[in-house]
Every structure is written in C-alpha cells, then in structure tokens.
Image (cartoon, rainbow, N blue to C red; front, side, top):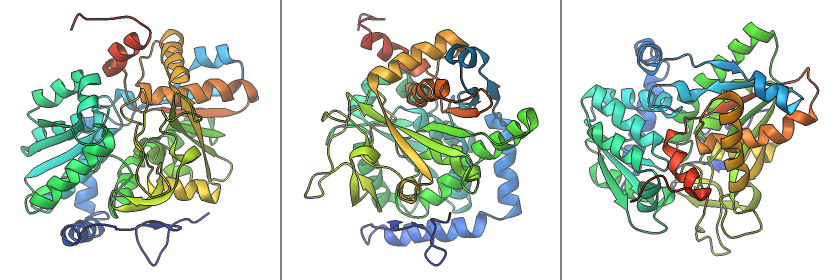
Length: 401
C-alpha cells in the first residue's frame, strides 16, 4: 500500500509538506537538497553505518522474552532492545545521520528539542564526538521530571534551555528550537528528534531509524524463519514507531500497532491521545493530526511520559492510520506504570516509561493469540531516568529535595 506521493516528496497522502515562515524556507530547502544529494552517497552511508556499529553498538539485540511469553500464555514475545544502544535509546540512530549531514553542510552548531531528554542526550553526545557546539531546548516541567538527563546533557557540554512559555513541555521546546533555528540557520543545524516537522525531517527520521526494523526482520528470520505477526511500538511524534514499522510496511501480514499516551484517559482533558481524539491541522511546519480546538488552537496535553506528551503525530503515521495499514491504541498512565513494574519483575529490564506503553499493549494482546504467533515489541529506551518519577507516582519519595 503506497501512502507517499512520488511527484511531491515529503507528502504522505494529504499529510506532510512544508508550512513555514518565509525566513526559514530557504534553509529548509537547502537541508532537503543536501539530504537528497547525500542519502545514497556511498561515503555518507559508509560513515553512518560505521558509527552505528562502532559507536552506537548496533545491531541491537532481538531478545526472546521467555518469562513474559510463559506468564501471558499466548503469542511468543520478542523485545527489540533499543535500550541497549549507546546513550540508552533509539534516538542515537537518527542523531548520527543528521549530524553527519550537518557536518557536510558546513554547520558548526547543533540544536535540538527534547521531552524525556533522550534525544537531547543523544544530540549532546554526538556534538561532543564531532566537536560541535550544542544547545538543547526542553520544557521547564520536563527539566524537573527528567533532572538526570538534564545533568547528562550538561556533562556532555551542551547548554540546556528550560522553556517557560506555553505549557512548558515538548511542543513548547519545539517552538523555541524553531525560533532559534530561524535566527541562526547560517551556522546551525536543527536535529529534529521525531518523525515530525517540515519536509525533509520526517523522511530523514524514517530513513535513519529504519535500521530498527531492518535488523529485527533479519534477526527474526534467523531465529524463527518467519515474519512477525505483530510489531508494537510506543508513539509520540513517532520516530521509534516509524523505525520499528519501516521494513514491514510492504508486508501486509504483519500487523503494525502504535501505542499513544492516553494519560488519565481519553474521556478526560489530561491526555495526549492524538490518534484517538485529534483532527487534521497545521503545526510545527507540517500538516498532520493534532489535538486542537474548533479554532485550530493546539490543546494542552498530559502524560506521565515526557517523551509522549506531544499534541500531534508525524505525517507518515497519520497517513498509515487513514490508509488502515497501522492501528493506534491509547494506553493510560496507570497501564504504563503497571507495565513498567511488570517487565522489571518478569524480565529484569527497567524500560523507559515511553516503551512501557507498548509493553502494556503486549500484555493485553498476547494472551488472545495462539502460541504459534509472534509479537515484536520495541523497547525504545531504558528507564533509569523514570525511576524517581514512577516511585513518586506510587507514593514513594526517593530523595528529600
């Protein structure tokens, strides 16, 4: 099923595109031209894959979760372990690719938005490796609940800006990063962390993150000799999920499920369930689905997960839902926290709270399937950063400050 527009790059059905102030359009067009030039360049691809292997530590493991499989009593469960990458998440894959492009464009400064902090840490890491200046924009509320990652970014040499406008979360960090980019595009490259924004960012993120599913497809063939029946991944803006889905898009027997943050529930105002409740609009340089009011004003969103409380979704995901190729399900805070505790006790894995939205979906689905079927669930990151927040959610205070 084709959802891309061959005559208009960056369009997925009616979604995507470039909706930006005139001030930014020339730079975005330069980025698009540079990516079109380098994406198939042998030297570029060789350097990208060398860094993935020798620096990020790929390929990541495809791990058979035998305890979860036995406990849930249905389908076989495999975990794609992006939490084992250098920096502790899938974000490093895309950051390496975009930073290499920035170098080839002659940029000396990287900026990025971040919610849970994993993309910020990955960007700061590569900036340190490449000897580039780095500044990260993060909503003030997110800096408070992800203080460990703030310190990690600063330790790596990045300057972290606590954004105090709007709701002081991820969408506001994106706004601040875009404003900075408009002012300093002459020496700056905006490393977009999710599959959102104006073309070519959703395309680049898809391409650089597709290594996740390219690996899992080959790995499962080696161990089981078949395709998975289901691929499940958490989705905020959508980088982890699009990377998990990419290699399976043309395999109609593989069901693709994205798990979004329902927060306190889809019947409440404290949610980030874009696919369940959103509508078509334009925001952050793209046409996609957003949580917004009747006048097109973006709603405030909530999730226990700083990485999933974004009021929209990448345009490719919006098209995948409209086409029926992928399904998107809401997972509440309570379900994600229970899954956080479940996978820790069952498999000895402390997974990111973002990833645990996908684990919660596996807990629901696996018992309904025959033992012959296979689920791959992507663990997008590790959960060290979330331990204090989850403890607080359970009424446990880990420190006095």
